[in-house]
Image (cartoon, rainbow, N blue to C red; front, side, top):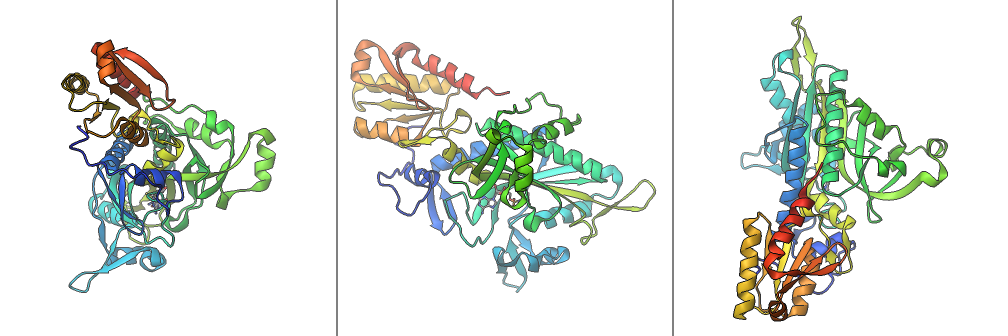
Length: 448
Ligand code: 5CA
């Protein structure tokens, strides 16, 4: 992509009302534009990161055996009356009336709708288990939308739902999602720690929040330092195996959110030097709630003996749009973002220091083509901006690698190569820089 063609409205000033780094940087780097309180447009650069995160979530859901579908954003109040949540959900639910006076709502979550879908289609115990998910915009009329996409009113969520015949089978589904989440966040470069959590308006009695530690996080959390060092299950994990040992490994060490914290247990079970009391960002939340929805909504299947079996359910959320902010909180400096390769909007930034100079243009065009041919995603700064402005802009948007080409380098046959993560710079021969960088990108994109 040529920058002259792209839309990248970067801001030089720091936006006054943005309190945390990710919110400031997303505005400054032209990733989002506020449309209303807690509602954002995703500009081209931000949209690319959102899509990369969404795709990692999707790949790991699929690997775990979940099946993708899509439910609408607008739901009927009727459905929510069946579960009793239409009134219970309170002011967080955005209620709408259509022209016929029918009560509708913008979905804050989809337990009711998916239960209705299974109720209509699954008739026999032979139709279970099922594990379904979608990635869809939600709306919650939050009291305090803040921190940009971190706590929005409209936000993108992956929500999965499991349906099983008994509690033991439901636990197996829970364990699949638990394991998939460990992998999902690790692929984005994040260390997300599963913590015992409160279930809130979703309900149930078994629940974990996946938390990344960050000073700007909204939740107070407590955990054992050893959790940070645990290695995440590899891509050869067989999701049809017994995953309980994996779950046990992560849940045997102390980790709890504020609401579930037990100060006495924390002190007795964790040695003093391993105790972490910190703040965290909730990037995922999983629940097992048995018959909470299937019972009032009469979602049953016929068992082997012809008797009705109520569906045992769980639900599993990932904050896809929140993760864009979460990754920035984990990877940035004063100058801007420092994207991990897996979620970077482009892999490489190519800077032309003298656009309009025939030799420099030709050298850049050649490198640009070679990189694209090698499958590398390149943002080519072919604009006439000054060098200083180009460097600052490239650091702000934080692409992992930069290649800089100017008349001086052309004379000596050298390009400058810069790694954004640590600022390391080196000279690479212009003729081989594309192949060299393509190799590094490929390596960085490899994962276990
Ligand atoms: N139905 C269940 C699981 S599918 C559910 O809705 N769970 S949740 O309420 O915990 O939301 C799932 C995830 O969505 C959270 O872990 C969080 O990462 C994200 N999320 C929740 N509220 C917001 C919000 N206001 N802005 C951005 N992300 C949010």
